[in-house]
Image (cartoon, rainbow over all chains, first blue to last red; front, side):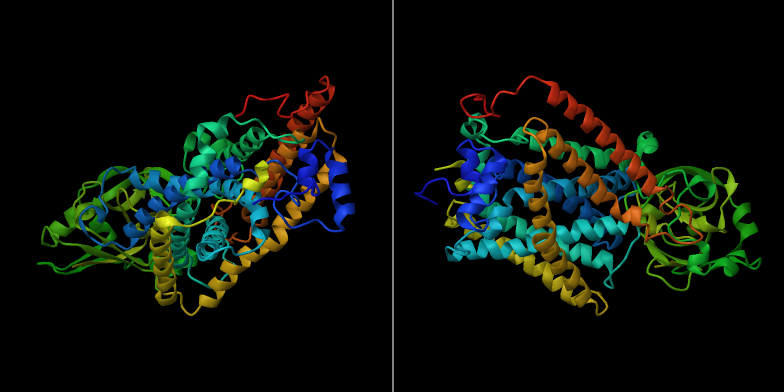
Length: 411
Length: 160
């Protein structure tokens, strides 16, 4: 873009060495309005392609991290059961790590996205708005990219704070919108490849700091990094226990809740206050079994007991480890004479809600740490943790650790 | 050509761009198709309100406010403290924005004290206060420093 005229806008006046105040004032005087042309209306030297390229690179890394960990979580809950895409029962820390990273990367992406959008904001007002068919395609693809990014981060932040001011299903919208964002990102990478390579190259790195006042380019990026670091340190303690004391803005504390463990769905919220305390409670085992069972709480307590260290790991990014005690699921399946390749649908006393049942695949069903837990940290389960009996299994999203288990359907 | 004229000045096109465009728009279509056929339970309109609403609020309200605030900053800050004021404003703004959902506390539920267990308004005030204190100290130090060399190319030519 060639502009063969004197320094008329704020940016050019600043570049020509004027003080910011004078530059803005005289630009307004000269033209009456702030002109909507890059480099003139936006006085800051930070509207710079190297700043944009570096922020873009970091943001792409954060988004691709969110996408990969998000897909993992999605397929953990909606298994395809194809080779590697089946959820393994170990290592036990895997989902805790991927989902903690998912939420932390999303939070880090907030300052990166805002800084990136601010840096390139002058381009929203570029004139002419469309220069070619390719330019039109590039700009149209910014709609899913930018709107989708704002949507994913905004609704994601609200979701981890359990705030739902909308009517759509969050998991479904978050999953499908992610594909739109990644699609928009692919187009954007194609459009900005050349520019980004130049901006990250040696010449650009060695080019002098443009004149002007206020934050330098390096100072701006450092500040954005500080902001990203601050929001991470203030929240990540909800899953990284050593940092829990400084997690002042985290939606959860890993040790606050009944029996020192957080709860998503309470017994009262699930409507099981009466049924869970019913003295006639019995666990039913049925389906593809040689011997259907009906086990009272005393029957369950009389079976061999085992203990396992397993972290409750929520899709919302918090996790909390505990020592669970109870009966191995595979022992109950053996007692019922279920085949070795049996999967199990675990049903709750809960009558309504998307998470009132879950499916346990073969690796999880046969894992020695997969328990029908009756105790946590040596105490009888609290009602809110699933009394009388809950499923607990390594490397599974928390919503699948079904509470108030009433029925095992072997399939 | 000035540096700022470069921002977005490259022509778009070429084989690489068109391959990316076809693949990327395919993925966008896959996502949109999934949304329209998924179990959104008749709430596609609610999705659209938040999807386009977020974009419009950013581009038409949030971004102009930030641009205006940055311009206003030019009038109220001296040259030497300006970077410190900008950095403090950015960090405080980011922390405030990210903590908005927990500070508003709309997700609180009676009977579940493990949800949003902290006093987030107080915590945010503490964090913001700490950053402001650091900013003020840095600002005072910047002001006392002898006049900073002008950051024009001739004076600072060591690049990034």
